[in-house]
Image 1: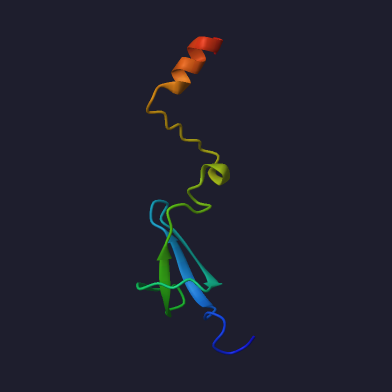
Image 2 (image 1 turned 60 degrees about the vertical axis):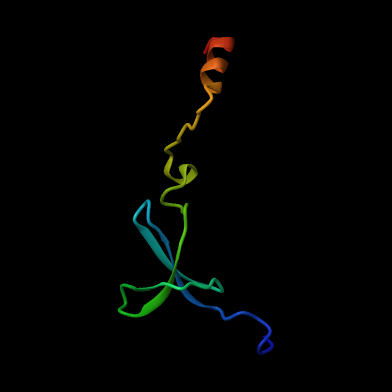
Length: 80
């Protein structure tokens, strides 16, 4: 790679606070915060809203968010 053209590619911790899950990988993502990892080194940490530990597709738990009652209207209309 050409110097001073590409962003720095380094180890970064991605953390899902809702699921209490974190993983270390390499990325170009930047972060202000740091965290001490299991190996004793300090890495930048990026907080994410959803990860494989909290996403319904991977966990098998589905969440139904229905604030308008559309699901109930559908069930009444089609008898389910």
